[in-house]
Image 1: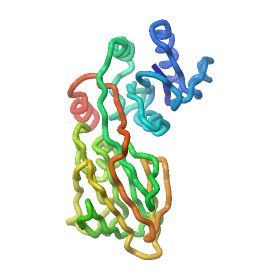
Image 2: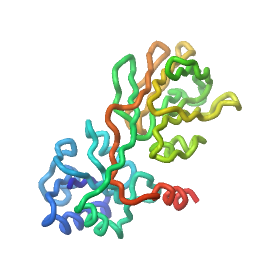
Image 3: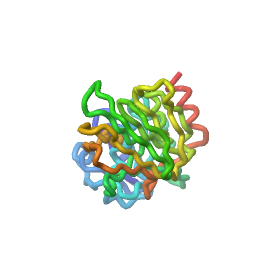
Image 4: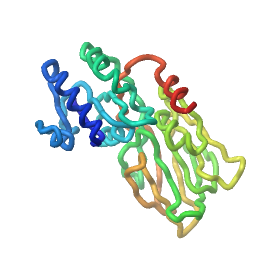
Amino acid sequence: MGFVCKGDVESVKMVRYLVEKFESRAEIFVEPETAQKLGVEETAVEKMDVDLIVSVGGDGTILKTIRKMADPLPILGINMGTLGFLVDVVPQEAVKTLERVLFGFDVEERSRLEMRLNGKPLPPATNEVALITSRPAKMLEFDIKVNDFFLERLRADGLLFATSTGSTAYAMSAGGPIVDPGVDAVVLVPLAPFKLSARPWVLPGDSEIRVSLILPNKTALVVIDGRNTVTISEKDRITIVRAKTPARFVKTREGIFYEKVKSKLA
């Protein structure tokens, strides 16, 4: 198994504890930054030949790890933060969960989104692709097509295209619906729309979505999972489709998503 870590003191301590606990029972690999702090051999995430990766930290640690892999390995998240929807295991249950996982585990695959800019693919999004104004308080105008059918012309500060996994992230804060991650869907959420009638859409996961900036001489930012950023203008062609490879998560038990929604959003 491979280990990645948020990098804070408590997370590093947890990795050290788990490595010492399981190094005699499994082949262990540790990503470079954490390995240096532990004084052990390091292995880049993209070069790990393992059945699963244990991510110690929060949702951001998992998203960062997934970005490093062309075809993501299954990830088991141990939550060292507070509000996390991708991390299933509390620290007190880490050892017991890993002991069970050593005897086998089920994998849950979740669709990601790929944005193509002028035909060139950008890094896939596990949570969302955001198209936002590059100038605060200046609205944008978009034409949106789904499978070549015109959906809407919309004036807003931006648009969010979220996966079901990302429905509980930025999209939820912007007024989008909570979607079970087992549902293959794309959630479209307008950001501060001009029309009161503008509402979120839930679209089929295999949709091909085309977006055009309408207003001339305006630019927007494309932000993928809060990390990768590029600038676009009305001359650019934007297409959003399902990514070829999904994100994969170790399934710890049934019904945990609903438990997390109730406990974290109460």
